[in-house]
Structure formats: structure tokens, C-alpha cells
Length: 121
Image (cartoon, rainbow, N blue to C red; front, side, top):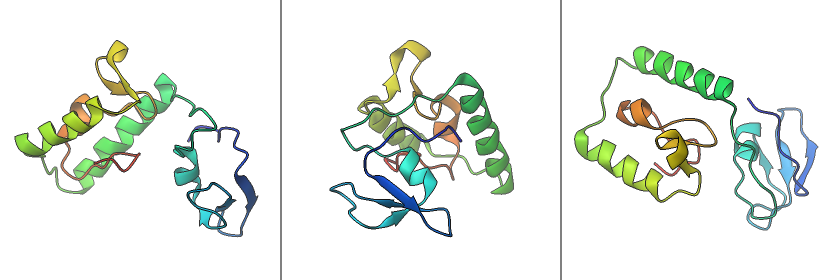
């Protein structure tokens, strides 16, 4: 996982490794690191994933896909996911439509059990 970005809302960490968040959307709740990592609060920029992190994310998706029995998304589901991705601020046309945050796109859209790390699909 990439190092957490600077955030004025992130406060102390509890014994489970979650952070207390003072974002106006969350206020006072503890959130896990993966949610904190992909926070969309407008007062800070998200750190784009490096190519190494994108490769690691893809490798994990493939391992999870095999473990799930190789479910394939239908053409309709693929098209639905792609249309959502194309409207996302993290969709990067300069990298053939890969997500700037995690690197998903292309193949991952066909993996039936996968979800968007931003919880958009």
C-alpha cells in the first residue's frame, strides 16, 4: 500500500490500526487505512499509484480471481464498469484508461468478483 497522503482530518490510530477521521463526511468515526488511503475529501490530493503498486494490485486481483473460481463479468457488467470509470476523475486517458490510483482498468473490468477501490462499481 502506498504511504498515506497528508490529511488534516486524520487523527490518532486505534488498536485495530484504524484512524479517527474528522472529515465533515465522517466526523469522529474510525476508518481503516484502505478507506483513509482513498479518501476523496477535496482539501487534499490523492497520491497516484506507482507502476510497481499498479502491478502489485493487478497481481493480487488475478490471485483473488483464481481463488474465486475465475468468474467472468458479463459484457453488460463490463460496459457498466467502463462507463463509470470513464466519468471518474482518476480515469487516465494517457495510460489507455487505467485508474491513476490503483491501476485497474482493461483486464480487471472483466474479472467478475472485483470491485472498484473507490467503491464506484
